[in-house]
Length: 457
Ligand code: ARG
Image (cartoon, rainbow, N blue to C red; front, side):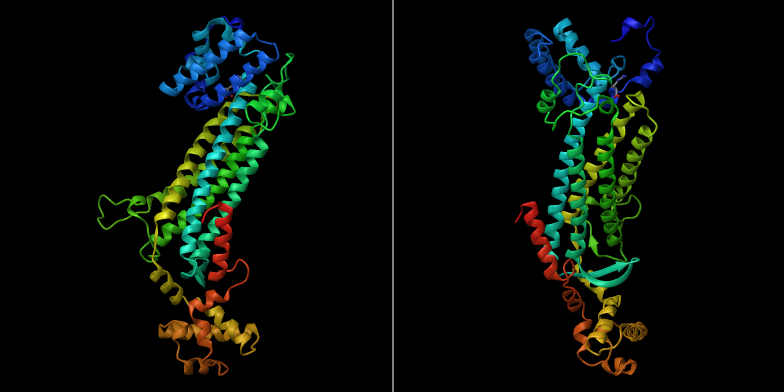
């Protein structure tokens, strides 16, 4: 492609280090779409004749059909997807193929292809995240009133409802989706026509190619256009944050599936056994989601490091932009699908969840609040009285609401029979009815809002 300037061919290792075709062949659909938009514009502007443009368009369609049927051949000598396609086009239609690259460089070409690819990736992630939200909302609706311990420091804190806990993840995923939507909107500008770095002297129409490719318009600065990878970083940063939410949910499933917790049993379909320990049922899918989040963050750091010291405009370092984005996307898509499957099919052990809430003195705050509300005791003093009650319950090995009234009255005689209504876990969660609180009514309201937002029943 640049033979005119060179007397010798590249060293074998040069070929190898230079070639991106092993990974950038994933851009083939976008590369062909970009070329089709470009050649149609060149013809409309009278830069390429109508017959040549038609031959190029037909030839590109055929190359695309071949790729779809047989895959993209990996010829390292052809370096990348752009040259592979152009070379195949030349074989098919002859010298007219050489007119396709008029007023274009691989620098604006790859930037265009990659933006299109990331845009598609965002759309598929968004669909996956919507499906995960549907799964979360459905399970939350089933368990709006199922009581479980809420934790701080992984110590039992106050009773909450399982539906409330699951809806916390709905909220995280909603923010993730909005980050991807932002990234899509910001990245949806066409660099095509920026050429190598400075623009072109040909009378091209960048607005036309932008529109043909579904962009909101052309980018405004040719130097920025060929050297900007913010759109890929935006994607990776959104993916990183999303994957850490998935990882936290995965971690909870792992803890909850352990025997001492026993809050859930993960379905066979998302577990594995052990080759030596017959009793085992391991939460491998959840562990891999947790593991993948580290790799996705690594991909984000990888491209950040690639870009951080690059002068304007294009440098070949930027060819390294694609592997981390592809890797992160594949890992994220798998993680979303696996989490969705687990959320849909996990069995929540309501009896164990309730027993854990009852055993951990989770209603101690309710006792203190009752002393304030009913017996008009200052909160600090109520806290102290409650602490003694917890100590007693611990010594007797019973839950707070199983303490005999006379024992409670030995601690403080202002306590009376009515206190027991406040000490049960159901009363506790029902009382937390502030907006966004854990009360079943609140959970049902949030679930209804979420279903409306998702367009489901
Ligand atoms: N394969 C290259 C990449 O992915 C395409 C751009 C090459 N441009 C150049 N001036 N060598 O970045």
